[in-house]
Length: 114
Length: 116
Image (cartoon, rainbow over all chains, first blue to last red; front, top):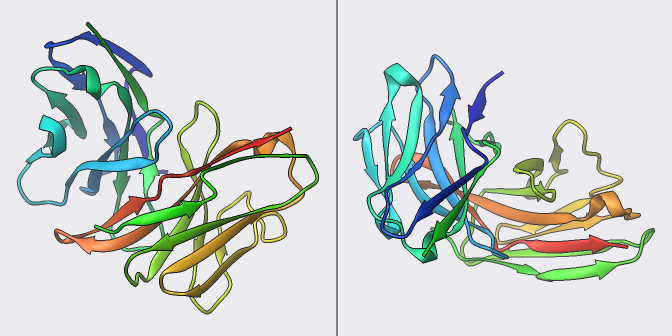
């Protein structure tokens, strides 16, 4: 079965430091890839997505992610963390088509220390 | 994207009762979905809400427990029936649109349910 693995359920960085949240998927077929962010007491917001165009994808709030087929990875990065980035981040994959075939990772909670 | 609203935003309910959650989207969409996010967990798809026909449920979810309505292309409801404390979760609806060459799901703000 297809799966998504997010390494590290909790990541803590200092304000201004690099943010790196890891996501690996299991598939021999390149999927569509998504990162969603969930701020405390809110729903999910789409951060960015990869849809087989450019491998480096830029999203909102200064985040970006790079699709690396050879590593089956789609890690999320931000050069300089801000306090407002503290949230839970979910990686998800789909393989095209509809019917809600989004497969979510377990999420990574990002803490930002002053 | 789409603007999605859910009612209620949160509720505290007694076991054995039922709660109906509403999801409204600001444009017509073909695909609407209902997810559950249990405490500390990721999202699990409950069902696909089909307009004009019965919802399609994922393994482990049944219509008697989670009846769903989809009367038109902008609205859906999910009922959590005969609730128990194990039903305490965040319930999210999502809609799917074609965006940037891929089907993309956008989520509502969620309904936080606590069952006592």
